[in-house]
Length: 68
Image 1 (tube, rainbow, N blue to C red):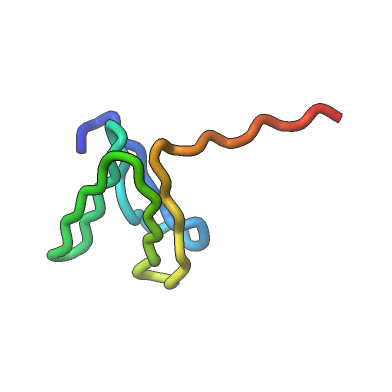
Image 2 (image 1 turned 180 degrees about the vertical axis):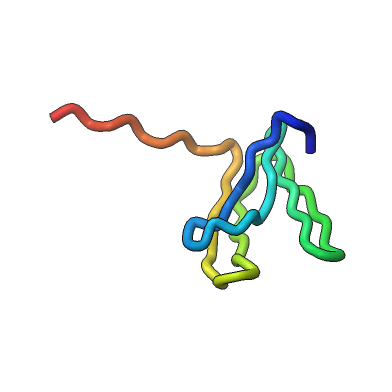
């Protein structure tokens, strides 16, 4: 992954789970090295707190705040 990558962190404990760049998700943990590209939905279970974290591609933008 290059310098333009974004970190994918656990939503519960903030552990680094993967990096995103160019429409791909790269996961590296000890001897595990995996890259997922194209259209995907991946659930990554945190190695630290065991919380499931969902990553999709293309990355879904946050919905705009609704006007009151």
